Image (cartoon, rainbow, N blue to C red):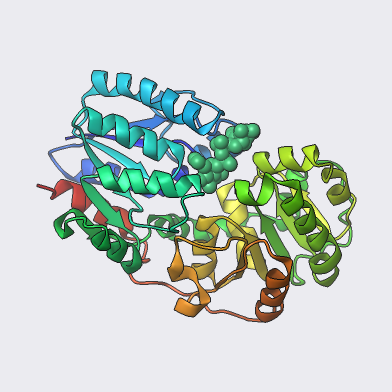
Length: 382
Ligand code: UD1
């Protein structure tokens, strides 16, 4: 059997890592080895957004990099399809495995299906029911086309059944990102907090007062709906500086898209000079895990962090008005409150969650064995 796995953007590397290790394990134990090719579309290309993850998660270097780079959605998807089709023609895989919901996921599943190659989608069935999110379009199209749909939770399975997907094509496997979390959690002990901060500061900042043993919060934001408009981003920045920052120190790990917008809207300097907020470069996987484990509260619009907070028991203010991951919500037994970018709602939720000490929550099959179930599902597909 020949499998091509596709990655393109930062969260994909974290999801594919345990799947690749599972293939390696299978090949070391079985006589019928799987020929595996890793294709990186190149959507993320900075070392801090890409290469560093391959190194620290010990993932094989991509066999092929399509070097697509940044661009509009259509440019990214179109260029990926054109390049990936050439790979498919040459390599003739039996399966293309895509993960998550980024542009690479959509582009490569479409290219594969047009060549009558089977597609397996890991993290299938998530729905925000919000088509203004590019990721929702990517999920809908990918799931519509996939032969094998591997879901992280029962909500996702139900979504697919409601959409008319035949049940024999859906397998509930659990959350593959949590495999990576369990595989790596012990490694964070070796990371020094002081070095983590000092090695990742964006520019000179005054940080002498920062004591991580006290409660601190983390901010991450990169969704276009939060960072692409000044009338939304500026009040959020002011709120972090003038309200949350006055109550607890904050660490903001800044995504390149967000940095560009903060500079464009002339908000960057006010953040750098704010002594209550430390601004860091995008962090590696282990560094972010370390911060998450030690923090009191997370402000984020990232789906992956919502999930990691759930398993680590970190209170999470989700800076979105909807989520494709309802299992992480407080009302469903999780740790996250949907807050959108409305300041009153963020403030209320902050007051509610700030002193909560959640225990770790492990939804069904978030047990570190998802990658094995993914590979088993592919091997037993007929
Ligand atoms: C993408 C995914 C999003 C995911 C996020 C994780 C889609 C539609 N979006 O969003 O679902 O949550 O990745 O990070 O696929 N840039 C750099 N260096 C890089 C990559 C990007 O500077 O290595 C900058 C460029 O200015 C680029 C911008 O960031 O235009 C946005 O990057 P892009 O890959 O288009 O989308 P993300 O916002 O990262």
